[in-house]
Image 1 (cartoon, rainbow, N blue to C red):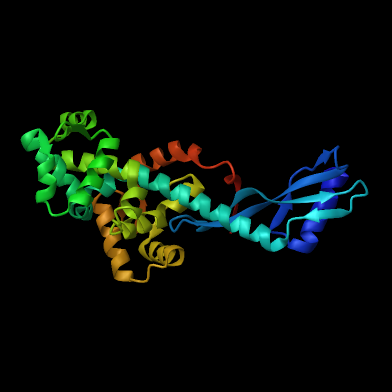
Image 2: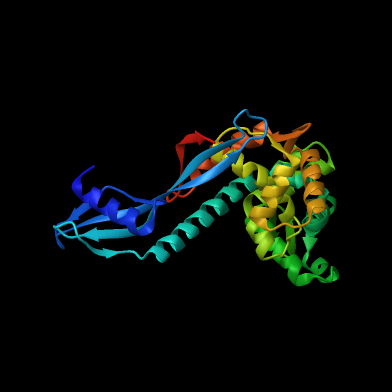
Length: 310
């Protein structure tokens, strides 16, 4: 450790506490100062109920939450205030969790699409593809007959963007992706599930925010209450029901224990999770897909490989 980093680190530890640290400083020839980035190795407790070491401590490396500048005499002349560093840290952690949850949704899309709730609340999509299966074309006049012309136009615009349907003169017909999904599926339910899976995989934030389809949120919260820990530990872990309930309440504010446990049972039925009494654990295919997608997380945050048993 060079003397500039030692001085910067000493200042941060003394004034900001040991949750923050600094990178190696770089000397700025223009201002004749040393500039170091402030960072945090944020602790994350990973719980594995079946392990002989039920809790492990891993660290999420969060760089660039502030800067500190020292003059040639190694005196601090400028630094990001502590409160701003904390705010930046929280924003980075929230970003990391949101991106991790998005990966969980993408990897779990097939299972989420198998839920009866997906077929109920995304029924307008199924109505559109069912009509195309019957008639090969949806005329514009049909939209008026639905009594939900504006909303159905939104769904058709989304499905057109995804190449599930295609705009033609006077209406809509099937798109290339719909043809492909229909050829690959074995039966009507499997085809509908494949359409919904593609929709959830590619456009869940739009369904939630634009179309206000929020009925799947609890399933995603419960699913993530398990998979976030597995994602962070990069290994399949085992959790009892109460552990998942506690995590769901703490992370998402879900207060309805019965609702959480019912969602958990439905996720097992949909093969989003596996269950071998008394433990819930990852579907191996979904977990492998999550690990493959993990490289898409922002560079701003990354899990430190090392871990410490507690």
